Amino acid sequence: MNTSSALFLLRKLPSVDEVLRLPAVITFVTHEGRATLTDAVRTVLARLRSEIAEGRLDDAQVDLALAGLEGAVERQVARSLVYSLRPVINATGVILHTNLGRAPLSSSALDHVRESAQGYSNLEFDLDKGSRGRRDVHVDRLFQKLLNAPQETEPVSTIVVNNNAAAVFLALNTLAENGEAIVSRGELVEIGGSFRIPEVMAKSNAVLREVGTTNRTRINDYERAINDKTKALLRVHRSNFEITGFTEQPSLEELVELARRRNIPLLEDLGSGALFDLQSIGVTGEATVIDSLCSGVDLVMYSGDKLLGGPQAGMVSGRADLIERMRSNSLFRALRVDKLTYAALEATLLAYVKRDYESIPALLMMHRSKDEIARRAEAVVRQLTLPAFQITLIDGESVIGGGAAPSAVLPTKLLAIDCKNLSAHEIAVRLRTAEIPVIIRVEDNQVLIDLRTVFPEQDAILIKALIALGAPPSGA
Ligand SMILES: *Cc1c(COP(=O)(O)O)cnc(C)c1O
Image (cartoon, rainbow, N blue to C red; front, side, top):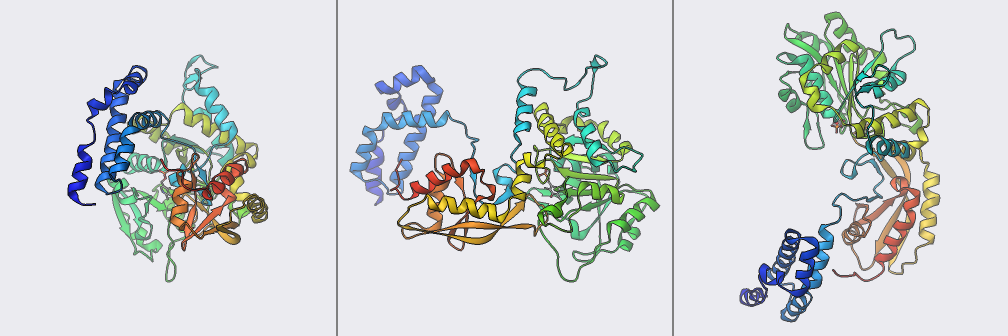
């Protein structure tokens, strides 16, 4: 399309005010309000304008669109009044998918959120004493049950903040403000594009003292860096990368020994922070929160919505005297969590205390066997009759995600979909824009679906979305 005919078509479009004066639109205004309608009209006209500019509409199509303007405005109003945050089906096989909300909550967590939030609660009220209480007692007692080694005399304390980034920030600001914290160069991680250890440290007013090289750091490097400004030794889990080959890092035992001898707190940013035995899902060499505390780490920091399988939150667990200092830091007030988070966390932790691991969706998904996934995948295939599509079952891997062990994968069975008429990318778009969006994986121009992260009760919705792929596109 040339510029002059585009200009000709653009001149056919009415102004916002003209559309607002159409009889049907006037009726909508009385129902939905002028602001909503003005927005909707602007959006519809802007869409038409860009379609014309891109040469996607000819004269007849513009006339057709103008004839249907009132309907388009009505649909746009309806669209603008639905939630933007919506449930999706995660068929990627990435269990703790950061873009898809990480850990799904258990039904008892949801129930507890609802019952604690729909009315009043004893969030900060001590029912025994009838006076003001502390909000963290509700979960601290459960963390004590879960984290205390039987022989330990001093109870482990836990403080909860908004996320693990906030936990690291609060710990460093409380213990190392105006001082130095020593970190290995091999652990200066960036996670999810925005959590960078050096930047978090700078904001916490702790000076980062880097030691060693990217691939080799020895205990002597830490020892030599200690001076009278040293306030902490920090160990960081390399959540999303591995350094292989010629590498050396001091063992946790060596770090603990050094920290004790020089009387400096040892902090560990674990990231994922599992509260269950990872070997039960075949992941080895990953320390749990208890392992870390038992080794003698003074404070461990970890997320609530990674391997723990609860709500977004960040925990610092460890020495009671250090936790108490964090509690009295005025920043704690800005970083603390609300009653919804406490309720979800309390219910999730209670499931651990009761050893009811199956009730935590992320844990259940990790424990799902390849055979069970294969049986469901076969049942899905049996219900699909899509002539233009070729659907096969292939071996593959699910990913734990959320910065668990970087190489931690679980064997799975994948539905691999090829289509004569649609590219993998087009299939991905069609599934993503379905009424209930389905998010899938594309690898080597092939659509892959992993049922490990699909709730069994969603299989029917997934099947419907796949069958709809066989139908022609519905248009707007
Ligand atoms: C994920 C992660 C963080 C950030 O945790 P959030 O809960 O997302 O703030 C920090 N450190 C490590 C090592 C992590 O894996």
